[in-house]
Length: 587
Image (cartoon, rainbow, N blue to C red; front, side, top):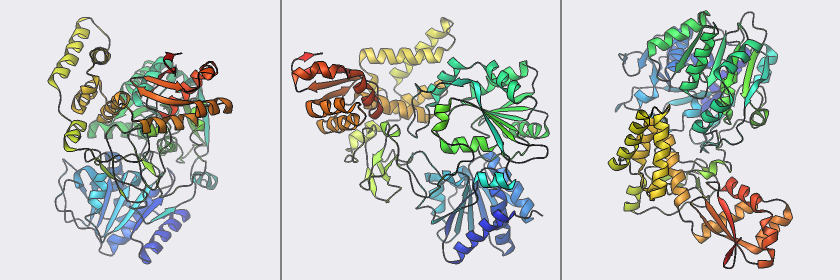
């Protein structure tokens, strides 16, 4: 029978104390490797022994079956599984559920306690829809990282946040491993990689940057130099890169396997088993091992996908920090440059976790976002976008917005019905589809190494030249995204970027954008010059035109053109060619 460590017991006691005084919903935080499953497993055990019914919810296979195994081991109760392709056992008082399956239930199974694993995902519509069905049940969420990059928060889902010791404290106690962090010999320059609407790097551009700067053999060489013969998890930016790294390791005689979200359940289980047994020495993955995989034998993590996401970074490095016999320290090999890493934190830095939502930064504001009257800036949830109505996670006020809104400021009025239909057109335009497919056929005949990428660039070129780029529907972009191996989120971003670049800004929007850009202009003398003698009169189709109201100052203003260009790009939605206009002349 597992006995909780003292810090785990202290965390559990705090949770029960809050429940005892009427606090119904609680989020618990423990660093990766701190044993959160053991804590909520013991809480579940106590409820089951009192005749209560419990549902534990997770969003991925690894989390579901890990929670089932640990809770059954701690409690002695057998858990039913609520998941597609598994036979339900509704009479069991303990259920472990896939959120994707549970959300489809018309009648929810009874529960006195709902436990949510990796609860930083819980503000999405699937979770809130389920939780609304349990107004009397106690709610317990657990995560290592109570943080989101979309401006959403947790204060209206959970009433209290209870944090355990920090990573540094657990290392000092011997409950986590000390670590050595190495910057790889071959690093990835991300200075020109755009960031997405959650502040992290654009996966497509990041993949291209990695491909142009690092060879798979470089990854193997780095491992041989710093972590030879040690059990390692490699984090890749996409499936193709992960498979390339595995092939390179295997060529070097190192047993390696690949894992991703599409790996079949039985094969995934077999791969993880071989890795745990040490038959496989290197496990390369895309988006799988960063959450919920408990393998203390992992000695090394090799990160070949730079990130600006604090949550993802801590989840990745935390995989190696679990203590194990004969493991003196963990090794972290980071292929990101120091400048990128400084934007995050060291694995054992303290972090002020909170339930409060954090406003989007200036980069994330380039994409679809809403600024509420309370001044909180956030990205609408996916289920809110089709409705063009969203709830502020800071004050709960209802806001309306436009698809393609990206310049900041207050939410715009609701669109009329015809504009709504255009904004969320999910149908595929057969003419545009045929053009794309024909370009693929041309590329195939010519033996192009990447025919679909070729078709995409040719489509963009033709659509831009012929003037129908903005007519490509969201549904067509999703079709193109699927062909390119991208997600629907990529299609949404592409649609929004084009809408924003093509949209003619109102004088008020131009003025607002110009004021924000001038905050970024240096030196102060240049900033004052533009503040007093200029205005932005055009910002569209990759062009920005600035009118200089005092002709004698034109020459002086021209010296700062590049400075202004950078400032506009930092606050706007695209890099523009800047023109300075004086009366009827363009300088």
